Image (tube, rainbow, N blue to C red; front, side, top):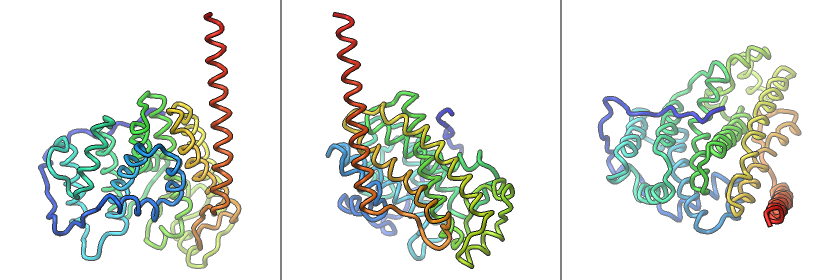
Length: 328
Protein backbone atom coordinates (compact mmCIF):
# COMPACT_ATOMS: atom_id res chain seq x y z
CA UNK A 1 0.00 0.00 0.00
CA UNK A 2 1.36 3.39 -0.93
CA UNK A 3 1.96 6.16 1.56
CA UNK A 4 -1.08 8.45 1.59
CA UNK A 5 -0.44 12.04 0.59
CA UNK A 6 -3.80 13.70 1.03
CA UNK A 7 -3.04 17.15 2.40
CA UNK A 8 -2.71 20.14 0.12
CA UNK A 9 -3.31 23.90 -0.02
CA UNK A 10 -6.46 24.94 1.79
CA UNK A 11 -8.47 27.50 -0.17
CA UNK A 12 -9.82 30.36 1.85
CA UNK A 13 -7.93 29.48 5.02
CA UNK A 14 -6.46 32.60 6.56
CA UNK A 15 -4.08 33.01 9.46
CA UNK A 16 -5.86 32.21 12.70
CA UNK A 17 -4.34 33.06 16.05
CA UNK A 18 -5.55 31.66 19.36
CA UNK A 19 -5.43 34.05 22.33
CA UNK A 20 -2.36 33.05 24.31
CA UNK A 21 -4.06 33.57 27.67
CA UNK A 22 -6.43 30.67 26.92
CA UNK A 23 -3.61 28.28 26.05
CA UNK A 24 -1.48 26.84 28.86
CA UNK A 25 2.25 26.92 28.13
CA UNK A 26 3.80 23.48 27.81
CA UNK A 27 7.33 23.32 29.20
CA UNK A 28 9.92 20.75 28.10
CA UNK A 29 9.83 18.90 31.44
CA UNK A 30 6.08 18.57 30.92
CA UNK A 31 6.79 16.90 27.56
CA UNK A 32 8.65 14.14 29.37
CA UNK A 33 5.96 13.85 32.02
CA UNK A 34 3.31 13.65 29.30
CA UNK A 35 5.10 10.73 27.66
CA UNK A 36 5.56 8.93 30.98
CA UNK A 37 1.90 9.40 31.93
CA UNK A 38 0.05 8.87 28.68
CA UNK A 39 2.44 6.74 26.65
CA UNK A 40 3.75 4.26 29.18
CA UNK A 41 4.53 1.56 26.62
CA UNK A 42 6.46 3.89 24.33
CA UNK A 43 8.05 5.65 27.32
CA UNK A 44 9.53 2.31 28.36
CA UNK A 45 10.86 1.65 24.85
CA UNK A 46 12.10 5.20 24.30
CA UNK A 47 14.56 4.85 27.17
CA UNK A 48 16.75 2.87 24.78
CA UNK A 49 16.97 5.66 22.18
CA UNK A 50 20.14 7.74 21.86
CA UNK A 51 19.73 10.85 24.09
CA UNK A 52 19.68 13.40 21.24
CA UNK A 53 17.16 11.43 19.20
CA UNK A 54 15.10 10.77 22.31
CA UNK A 55 14.77 14.50 23.03
CA UNK A 56 13.44 15.05 19.51
CA UNK A 57 11.06 12.11 19.82
CA UNK A 58 9.73 13.40 23.15
CA UNK A 59 9.04 16.81 21.57
CA UNK A 60 7.26 15.14 18.65
CA UNK A 61 5.18 13.04 21.05
CA UNK A 62 4.27 16.16 23.05
CA UNK A 63 2.85 17.82 19.94
CA UNK A 64 0.79 14.83 18.86
CA UNK A 65 -0.42 14.15 22.40
CA UNK A 66 -1.32 17.77 23.10
CA UNK A 67 -3.53 17.96 20.01
CA UNK A 68 -5.03 14.54 20.73
CA UNK A 69 -5.92 15.63 24.26
CA UNK A 70 -7.33 18.90 22.92
CA UNK A 71 -9.87 16.85 20.96
CA UNK A 72 -10.45 13.86 23.25
CA UNK A 73 -10.32 15.48 26.69
CA UNK A 74 -10.71 19.24 26.16
CA UNK A 75 -10.25 21.63 29.05
CA UNK A 76 -13.37 22.64 30.91
CA UNK A 77 -15.10 25.53 29.17
CA UNK A 78 -13.69 24.88 25.70
CA UNK A 79 -16.45 24.41 23.15
CA UNK A 80 -16.25 22.56 19.83
CA UNK A 81 -15.79 25.76 17.83
CA UNK A 82 -12.95 26.78 20.13
CA UNK A 83 -11.24 23.45 19.48
CA UNK A 84 -11.71 23.80 15.72
CA UNK A 85 -10.25 27.29 15.92
CA UNK A 86 -7.06 26.00 17.49
CA UNK A 87 -6.78 23.18 14.94
CA UNK A 88 -7.14 25.77 12.15
CA UNK A 89 -4.51 27.93 13.84
CA UNK A 90 -2.04 25.04 13.81
CA UNK A 91 -2.88 24.35 10.16
CA UNK A 92 -2.18 27.98 9.26
CA UNK A 93 1.09 27.84 11.19
CA UNK A 94 2.28 24.85 9.17
CA UNK A 95 1.08 26.27 5.85
CA UNK A 96 2.86 29.56 6.57
CA UNK A 97 6.15 27.71 6.96
CA UNK A 98 6.16 27.92 10.79
CA UNK A 99 7.45 31.50 10.51
CA UNK A 100 5.51 33.03 13.41
CA UNK A 101 4.79 31.84 16.99
CA UNK A 102 2.70 28.68 17.14
CA UNK A 103 -0.71 28.48 18.86
CA UNK A 104 1.06 26.96 21.87
CA UNK A 105 4.48 28.14 22.89
CA UNK A 106 7.16 27.13 23.65
CA UNK A 107 5.96 23.78 22.25
CA UNK A 108 5.83 25.25 18.75
CA UNK A 109 9.40 26.57 18.93
CA UNK A 110 10.76 23.23 20.04
CA UNK A 111 8.78 21.44 17.33
CA UNK A 112 10.03 23.88 14.69
CA UNK A 113 13.61 23.13 15.68
CA UNK A 114 13.04 19.37 15.41
CA UNK A 115 11.23 19.52 12.07
CA UNK A 116 13.80 21.86 10.52
CA UNK A 117 16.74 19.66 11.47
CA UNK A 118 15.08 16.46 10.22
CA UNK A 119 13.31 17.93 7.15
CA UNK A 120 9.94 16.38 8.04
CA UNK A 121 7.35 17.20 5.32
CA UNK A 122 4.57 19.60 6.30
CA UNK A 123 1.97 17.40 4.58
CA UNK A 124 2.32 14.82 7.36
CA UNK A 125 1.12 17.32 9.96
CA UNK A 126 -1.68 18.67 7.77
CA UNK A 127 -2.97 15.11 7.41
CA UNK A 128 -2.72 14.63 11.18
CA UNK A 129 -4.72 17.80 11.79
CA UNK A 130 -7.39 16.54 9.37
CA UNK A 131 -7.62 13.42 11.54
CA UNK A 132 -8.03 15.53 14.67
CA UNK A 133 -10.78 17.57 12.98
CA UNK A 134 -12.61 14.33 12.13
CA UNK A 135 -12.46 13.33 15.80
CA UNK A 136 -13.92 16.54 17.23
CA UNK A 137 -17.41 15.01 17.14
CA UNK A 138 -18.48 11.33 17.04
CA UNK A 139 -18.45 9.98 13.49
CA UNK A 140 -19.59 6.75 11.87
CA UNK A 141 -17.05 4.75 9.90
CA UNK A 142 -18.66 2.73 7.11
CA UNK A 143 -15.91 0.37 5.96
CA UNK A 144 -12.26 -0.48 6.43
CA UNK A 145 -11.16 1.92 3.70
CA UNK A 146 -12.54 4.77 5.80
CA UNK A 147 -11.05 3.30 8.97
CA UNK A 148 -7.64 2.99 7.34
CA UNK A 149 -7.74 6.63 6.26
CA UNK A 150 -8.64 7.66 9.80
CA UNK A 151 -5.87 5.49 11.29
CA UNK A 152 -3.38 6.89 8.79
CA UNK A 153 -4.28 10.47 9.67
CA UNK A 154 -4.10 10.11 13.45
CA UNK A 155 -1.30 7.52 13.75
CA UNK A 156 0.19 6.59 10.38
CA UNK A 157 1.37 10.19 10.23
CA UNK A 158 3.14 9.67 13.56
CA UNK A 159 4.90 6.65 12.07
CA UNK A 160 5.99 8.71 9.06
CA UNK A 161 7.29 11.58 11.18
CA UNK A 162 9.18 9.13 13.41
CA UNK A 163 10.77 7.54 10.35
CA UNK A 164 12.21 10.90 9.29
CA UNK A 165 13.44 11.71 12.80
CA UNK A 166 15.14 8.32 13.05
CA UNK A 167 17.11 9.17 9.91
CA UNK A 168 15.53 7.33 6.97
CA UNK A 169 13.23 8.54 4.20
CA UNK A 170 13.20 5.78 1.60
CA UNK A 171 9.79 4.86 0.19
CA UNK A 172 10.07 1.36 1.63
CA UNK A 173 10.81 2.68 5.12
CA UNK A 174 8.03 5.27 4.95
CA UNK A 175 5.44 2.70 3.86
CA UNK A 176 6.53 0.48 6.76
CA UNK A 177 6.34 3.42 9.18
CA UNK A 178 2.80 4.16 8.04
CA UNK A 179 1.73 0.53 8.46
CA UNK A 180 3.23 0.38 11.95
CA UNK A 181 1.40 3.52 12.99
CA UNK A 182 -1.86 2.14 11.58
CA UNK A 183 -1.33 -1.18 13.38
CA UNK A 184 -0.84 0.61 16.70
CA UNK A 185 -3.95 2.73 16.18
CA UNK A 186 -6.00 -0.36 15.35
CA UNK A 187 -4.70 -1.82 18.60
CA UNK A 188 -5.81 1.30 20.48
CA UNK A 189 -9.26 1.07 18.91
CA UNK A 190 -9.64 -2.59 19.90
CA UNK A 191 -8.43 -2.14 23.48
CA UNK A 192 -10.69 0.93 23.90
CA UNK A 193 -13.99 -0.41 22.53
CA UNK A 194 -15.62 -0.17 25.97
CA UNK A 195 -14.25 3.27 26.76
CA UNK A 196 -15.29 4.60 23.37
CA UNK A 197 -18.80 3.21 23.76
CA UNK A 198 -19.05 5.11 27.04
CA UNK A 199 -18.32 8.30 25.07
CA UNK A 200 -20.81 7.47 22.33
CA UNK A 201 -18.10 6.56 19.83
CA UNK A 202 -17.70 3.44 17.68
CA UNK A 203 -14.61 3.20 15.48
CA UNK A 204 -15.22 -0.33 14.22
CA UNK A 205 -16.56 -0.19 10.64
CA UNK A 206 -20.33 -0.59 10.28
CA UNK A 207 -19.68 -3.07 7.48
CA UNK A 208 -17.77 -5.30 9.91
CA UNK A 209 -20.43 -4.96 12.58
CA UNK A 210 -23.08 -6.06 10.10
CA UNK A 211 -20.95 -8.99 8.95
CA UNK A 212 -20.83 -10.39 12.50
CA UNK A 213 -24.36 -9.40 13.55
CA UNK A 214 -23.16 -6.72 15.97
CA UNK A 215 -25.25 -3.60 15.50
CA UNK A 216 -24.34 -0.41 17.42
CA UNK A 217 -27.35 -1.07 19.68
CA UNK A 218 -26.11 -4.60 20.34
CA UNK A 219 -22.66 -3.26 21.29
CA UNK A 220 -24.28 -0.73 23.61
CA UNK A 221 -26.24 -3.51 25.32
CA UNK A 222 -23.11 -5.62 25.75
CA UNK A 223 -21.32 -2.63 27.25
CA UNK A 224 -24.14 -1.99 29.73
CA UNK A 225 -23.94 -5.63 30.84
CA UNK A 226 -20.12 -5.57 30.81
CA UNK A 227 -19.97 -8.90 28.97
CA UNK A 228 -19.36 -10.12 25.45
CA UNK A 229 -20.99 -12.86 23.38
CA UNK A 230 -19.88 -15.13 20.55
CA UNK A 231 -20.75 -12.55 17.89
CA UNK A 232 -18.55 -9.95 19.55
CA UNK A 233 -15.70 -12.42 20.04
CA UNK A 234 -15.83 -13.35 16.34
CA UNK A 235 -15.76 -9.65 15.42
CA UNK A 236 -12.77 -8.99 17.66
CA UNK A 237 -10.90 -12.02 16.36
CA UNK A 238 -11.40 -10.71 12.81
CA UNK A 239 -10.21 -7.20 13.71
CA UNK A 240 -7.16 -8.54 15.56
CA UNK A 241 -6.13 -10.56 12.50
CA UNK A 242 -6.37 -7.39 10.42
CA UNK A 243 -4.19 -5.47 12.88
CA UNK A 244 -1.64 -8.32 12.88
CA UNK A 245 -1.33 -7.97 9.11
CA UNK A 246 -0.29 -4.35 9.50
CA UNK A 247 2.21 -5.23 12.23
CA UNK A 248 3.86 -7.68 9.82
CA UNK A 249 4.04 -4.97 7.13
CA UNK A 250 5.29 -2.35 9.54
CA UNK A 251 7.80 -4.31 11.60
CA UNK A 252 9.53 -5.52 8.45
CA UNK A 253 10.79 -1.97 8.04
CA UNK A 254 12.51 -1.81 11.44
CA UNK A 255 15.63 -3.33 9.91
CA UNK A 256 15.83 -0.36 7.50
CA UNK A 257 16.45 1.96 10.46
CA UNK A 258 19.93 2.93 11.70
CA UNK A 259 21.27 0.24 13.99
CA UNK A 260 21.08 2.40 17.13
CA UNK A 261 17.33 2.96 16.63
CA UNK A 262 16.23 -0.57 15.80
CA UNK A 263 16.12 -1.98 19.31
CA UNK A 264 13.82 0.65 20.91
CA UNK A 265 11.41 0.62 17.95
CA UNK A 266 11.37 -3.19 17.99
CA UNK A 267 10.60 -3.11 21.72
CA UNK A 268 7.75 -0.62 21.23
CA UNK A 269 6.32 -2.63 18.34
CA UNK A 270 6.47 -5.96 20.16
CA UNK A 271 4.87 -4.47 23.27
CA UNK A 272 2.02 -2.87 21.37
CA UNK A 273 1.49 -6.05 19.38
CA UNK A 274 1.41 -8.00 22.65
CA UNK A 275 -1.69 -6.03 23.67
CA UNK A 276 -3.58 -7.99 21.00
CA UNK A 277 -2.51 -11.22 22.70
CA UNK A 278 -3.66 -9.85 26.06
CA UNK A 279 -7.06 -9.09 24.52
CA UNK A 280 -7.31 -12.69 23.31
CA UNK A 281 -6.29 -13.98 26.74
CA UNK A 282 -9.10 -11.91 28.27
CA UNK A 283 -11.58 -13.77 26.08
CA UNK A 284 -11.89 -10.64 23.88
CA UNK A 285 -13.79 -8.86 26.65
CA UNK A 286 -12.60 -5.26 26.29
CA UNK A 287 -15.94 -3.91 27.49
CA UNK A 288 -15.18 -3.81 31.20
CA UNK A 289 -11.42 -3.19 31.32
CA UNK A 290 -8.57 -1.96 29.11
CA UNK A 291 -5.93 -4.47 28.02
CA UNK A 292 -2.36 -3.55 28.97
CA UNK A 293 1.03 -5.16 29.47
CA UNK A 294 2.73 -5.72 32.82
CA UNK A 295 6.27 -4.69 33.76
CA UNK A 296 7.33 -8.34 33.63
CA UNK A 297 5.98 -8.62 30.09
CA UNK A 298 7.75 -5.40 29.11
CA UNK A 299 11.09 -6.67 30.40
CA UNK A 300 10.58 -10.05 28.69
CA UNK A 301 9.78 -8.44 25.34
CA UNK A 302 12.77 -6.13 25.68
CA UNK A 303 15.02 -9.15 26.24
CA UNK A 304 13.63 -10.91 23.18
CA UNK A 305 14.02 -7.77 21.10
CA UNK A 306 17.62 -7.41 22.28
CA UNK A 307 18.45 -10.95 21.14
CA UNK A 308 16.71 -10.47 17.78
CA UNK A 309 18.53 -7.20 17.13
CA UNK A 310 21.90 -8.74 17.99
CA UNK A 311 21.28 -11.72 15.72
CA UNK A 312 20.26 -9.42 12.87
CA UNK A 313 23.33 -7.22 13.37
CA UNK A 314 25.63 -10.25 13.39
CA UNK A 315 24.02 -11.43 10.18
CA UNK A 316 24.64 -8.03 8.60
CA UNK A 317 28.26 -8.09 9.73
CA UNK A 318 28.68 -11.57 8.27
CA UNK A 319 27.27 -10.46 4.93
CA UNK A 320 29.68 -7.50 4.83
CA UNK A 321 32.65 -9.78 5.53
CA UNK A 322 31.52 -12.17 2.79
CA UNK A 323 31.07 -9.31 0.34
CA UNK A 324 34.51 -7.93 1.13
CA UNK A 325 36.07 -11.38 0.73
CA UNK A 326 34.36 -11.79 -2.63
CA UNK A 327 35.81 -8.55 -3.96
CA UNK A 328 39.33 -9.06 -2.57
